[in-house]
Image 1 (cartoon, rainbow, N blue to C red):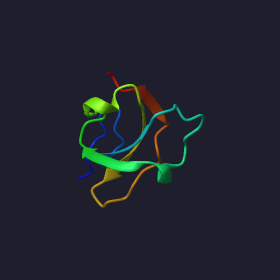
Image 2 (cartoon, helix red, strand yellow):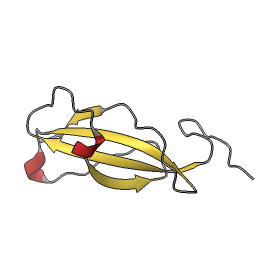
Image 3 (cartoon, one colour):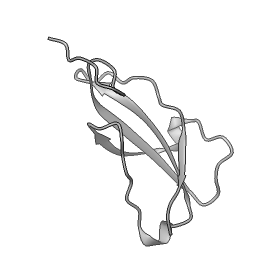
Image 4 (cartoon, one colour):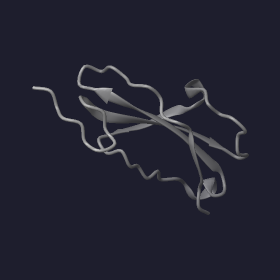
Length: 86
């Protein structure tokens, strides 16, 4: 039986891979997933990162993709950035 899609989740997807690059200067166009490091797997489409005190003011660059039960990975998300709170 195939799992029905939930809002924000494609049918058959279980995990959400989250990748991150932490930079001191906002990158003009960081779109290459190879420039990011694996951060976590989550079953929720929303994610809140945790950072160390010295990382405040830096830019967190995120990309994510869904993974199904067979380990097949979906397309990369758009790049999302946020400034780490001081």
